[in-house]
Amino acid sequence: MERALSVRFLAAALLALPLLGAKETPPPAPEKSQVAWAEHCQGNDGWDTPGPPFRIHGNTWYVGTCGIAAILITCTDGAVLIDSGTAKGSEIVEANIRSIGVKLGDVKAILGSHEHFDHVAGFARLQGLTGAPVLVGTEAAGVIRTGKDDPRDPQFGLHPPMAPVSGSVRGVKDGESLTIAGITLTALATPGHTPGAMSWSWRSCAGKDCRTIVYADSLNPISGDGYRFSDHADYLAAFRAGLARLRVAPCDILITPHPGGSDMPARAGGGSMVGGMNCAQYAEAKSMALGDRLAREAAVK
Ligand SMILES: [Zn+2]
Image 1 (cartoon, rainbow, N blue to C red):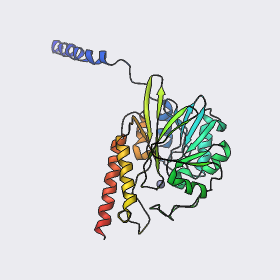
Image 2: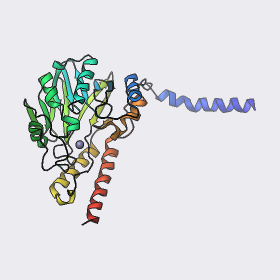
Image 3: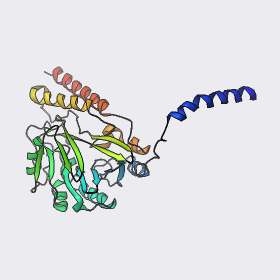
Image 4: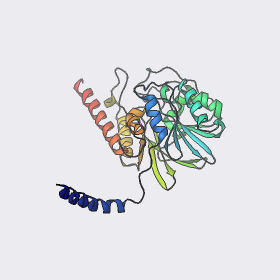
């Protein structure tokens, strides 16, 4: 019995040898700040629930609340912020930026995902504190400047007005590449949830471990009563084109404006944002949701 065991052990050890040899670098240790955030926010994804900041990867930080993301990318020349959360949530974002040692004056640009109050209603306040220009999808710029819903938005009329952004607001087109404070970001238009919805991608390095991060916007086909996506052929075509772009985008790490939308809490609990749901799977799930929605619309013709 003992002899059989030791032979088996030896065989297992020999089998494991090539595997050990092939693995040059051990997996990175779990990121403690992610685990702390997951524990703090467990069971509470309130939009205005304060949570600590955590490092997503390299120079990319999560500075949002428990339920709404805000992303800070830092560089020696300054930082770029994506999204603010609600007006109230922006106070938590502000505190989180400070707590990782970044001054608000170092924020050189504020980028937006989509023009709904849960993600961008804090823009006016944060622009006042940072003096930074706001950059959003071209089709979202009007909403940001006026604070009023776009009549083309499937959820038109359902949201409270936002504080208008009175300083610089610039519209960004699909495929545009921006270099701000030494950070290069690529805009990926993903309309559908709103007309101006924008996803963003950039490279993040932790030592030699460089990854492409995609902050993929919300793509849920939801609407107010009476709106039918099938009545808006151009809008539907743009929705599908955005999904197709996202499906093939380089994407090592997927993050989303609603953290639960891409299983971020579970990944944070494990201490790494690498792996798990990718952009292709996310786009596929949203394509299926759109297909279901269109089928429901067809059924009540
Ligand atoms: Zn939304």
